[in-house]
Image 1 (cartoon, rainbow, N blue to C red):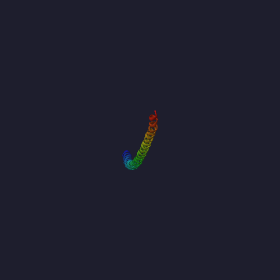
Image 2 (cartoon, rainbow, N blue to C red):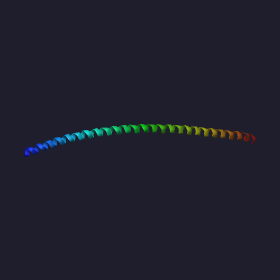
Image 3 (cartoon, rainbow, N blue to C red):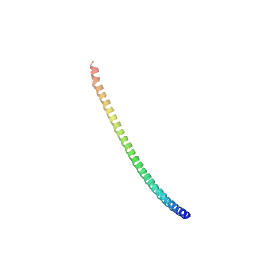
Image 4 (tube, helix red, strand yellow):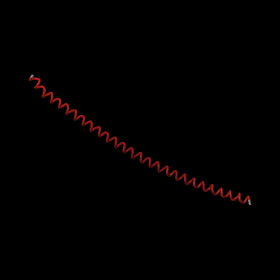
Amino acid sequence: MEAKLEGRIQQAEAKLQGRIQQVETKLEARIQQVETKLEERIQQVETKLEGQIQEVKNRLESLRQEVKAEINTAFNKTMLLFTLIGVALAPLSLLR
């Protein structure tokens, strides 16, 4: 009777070991799938972020060029104004 029970226990253990192995194999496959999907998703996000970073860089460069042009225009207008003031003051200094 004891030997019979021990035999059944060993059979149950063997079946359980087989099932455990199957479950581990399935879980490993699913984990691999999830890792692959996550890696793909991370790559997509990195690509998208790189594109957005480049777009921001381009916008900043464009704004820098605009500001540079505005500063040059303001400087030129200021120089012109000073020249006109100088031209206007020259006759006044001659009249003194």
